[in-house]
Length: 281
Image 1 (cartoon, rainbow, N blue to C red):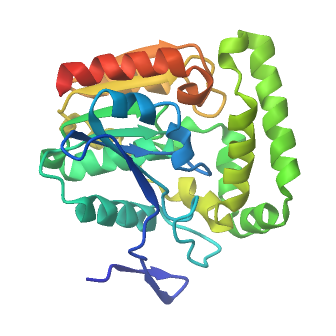
Image 2 (image 1 turned 90 degrees about the vertical axis):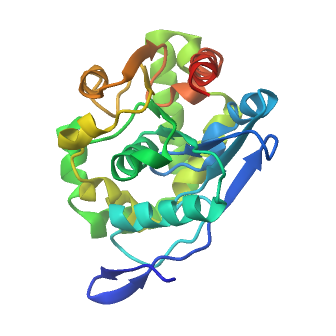
């Protein structure tokens, strides 16, 4: 069956192909991992081996327009396209058990939206610095995302070394502020720059098309861990405790780190996640 949507007046087909990896025993409890904007499944390189060692069946995907998944030609991506692609992937896996979903930032939005629409299909949630409403972004970023065509052209024409330079500056600033626990390794910085550059330019419009999930959060009743870096410079830090309060069955935990604590502080992050998983699986 084909899923379609409208793109600039033309019929838009959601491609069925998904790039993803699987780790751990096939009969292990299933866990799905979903990265954020301009990232890839490599976001989970530190967590996947530990999930596998704990006998979970972990699957991490590249979202539509990211990594090695399809990149439809559009100057302005929409959240609903990415979400439909994500749901198609989950359906194709045909798990016998209800999976646990782990999402970061935009991936957290996808997991929350899926849990709201299909609560019976989600065993538990781990939301890492989750994005669930546009107001979490600084005003300057919100204004930037309102210019999708300009954004796409800028991203398309920006060389990879510029992305790398920006990441290096940000990493250095975090290190000066919070100590070595906040910084990213050389390998992660290289991967981050690569992921930015290979993201479809139109995908940078996705945040501008998210629907505020606040009014639906009371419907997310499964066990949920909300975990965030205490020095996030991308999303408003007070939005994460607010999310914990709005979810009926959630606990929250701040750890040392910025917007990507699963990469900058994987030891502490992984421990919190594994402890939570043992309690719910």
